[in-house]
Length: 387
Image (cartoon, rainbow, N blue to C red; front, side, top):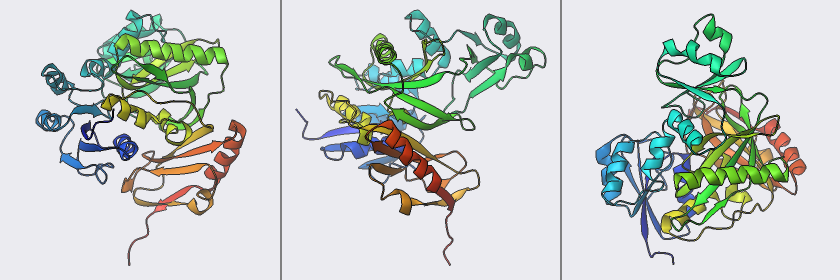
C-alpha cells in the first residue's frame, strides 16, 4: 500500500538527494532537506532547513517533521542520530551502521570479524607507528586511508614503503588504516537493497575505472566484464556484508578483483552511490526508486538491466573555476540512448562532480562507440559574462 502522503527527511541536499527526490516525484512524498544554502536539491525539495549536517538541533527539527529520516552523505552527526533512534524515530539506514562506516578502521575490523574477504591491514594511531606496522604488509606499496573524514578520493593516498621506512614521508597524521595494495586489480561495485521485511536483492555488478588524479570514478560499465562465477561470488559477498550489518536501505559494496581471482571488499557506502547512477535509465528500478520504496515500506522493485550501459562522470576541468558552460551538447544530445544529468551546481572547480552521462546500447561494444564520441565532443568553459 502506498501511503497517501509520507514525509521523508534527507540529511544532505547534494546530487544524491536531488536524484532521490526526482525518483519520488511521481508519488505523494513530501521531502525536506537539511543542507546549507547552496544545496543542489534545494530547488526541488518541498522544504529546506538551512544548516550544518553536524547541527544536532537542526537534525532534531528535521526528525520532528519527518516520518522517516535518511542521509545522502556519511559525514554527519551520528551521535544526534543515535539519540533520535533511541527515542523511536525511524532512521534508514540505522545510525549504528553509520557509526561503523564513518570509521574505515571499524569497517576493516567488521570485515575481519565476519569473515568477509578484504585486504590485509594495520591500524596506526600516530606517525611514529607507521614504520613498525609496515613489515606486516606485503608488496612495495600500501594504501593509506584516514580513518575518518575522507570523501570523494580525499583522505586516501598510495605510498611507497621505502619513502616511509627510509625517508619518513607520510601523507597523514593521526589515525590511519594501512592496507596491502592490490596490484592491477579490477574494481567492481554491487549495489544491495534490503528492506525492513528482510527482502534483499542486488543490482547487476558494475566495473569501474577511476580518474588517477581525482581518485574517483571516471567511467563505469554494466554489466561488468567478468565471468558468471565471479559475478555470482561478488553478489554473494556484497549481500553477506549487508546481512551481517542487519542493514536496511541502499548500500554500495566496492570490491577489488585481484589478478589471481580473489574478491576483496574495499569499502561500503550506506546510501545511493556514484556506481549506481546509470540505474536511473538502465534498470527497471533505479537505486533511487528502490530507496524510496524501502523508506515507504514497499516491496523491492526489479533490478534487472534493460540494456548494456556505461556512466561517465562530468568532472570539473582543470582550466575552469567558477561559473561554467558545457560545450558539445549539440553533438551529444541527439544520440539515442544517451542521457545527460546535471547537478545544479552554479560553479565548477577542478575534478568537482558536476553531473553524469548515462549511455545505453545493445551491447557494451555499441556503448563504447558512443562513449568515444561523447568524450570527443564534451567540453567545459568559463561562462560568458553579461555585457
